[in-house]
Length: 252
Image (cartoon, rainbow, N blue to C red; front, side, top):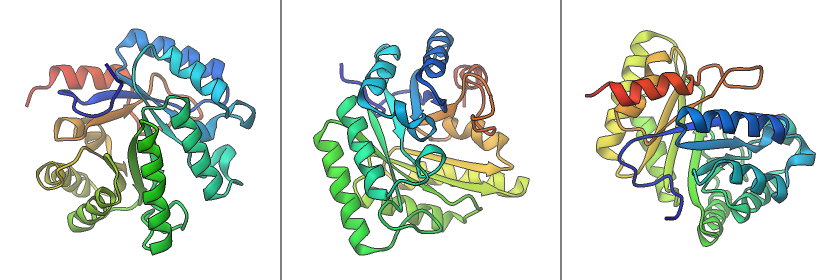
């Protein structure tokens, strides 16, 4: 059966890998395999440049033992001097190497403060990139990192536009500065489930402990987590062990 991030009955526990070397990534993968990881998220921008190549990607994918892999190729870390065209080429290389789900930034080819470009030429290039990735057998996630609180209307607007551009999975990252905003983000998660008609991942930073843990129970198609925390990992991403307990034991 072909690997996929789509059409699962339970949200996938996706272990994010932010590692400078493949050796560290392999160690994390092997440990997380034993802990019940469903999928992985390889953040290629954190790999040293000498390891950003098809041989390394295929080696890491093989260690995942048939689990699907989500890949990012963002602008920071070792990629900060790359052009967006070079980042796009990198995503294509990942798809050719066997990545399951490729992250296309919502403002690739034309930066935007909410990471969703409104430049027509850039949008057309995005749609052609998505078509190329689909032709290679990859699924596509489009991501918009706002890193600020956004009302429900704006979140839904972004989600519907990502869907229009051809994304299989919608990803939006906002923030919450208060507990009230975090509770509203939980409501927005449920709204996306009711209105979007597509798989999605809605996350927040700031005051986000509850949202990060319960989003998958309200409609998110996956949960981003880590096997362990270190200096490269995203602090707000919960441990795999915690998320497995929540997913498998909280029933509502």
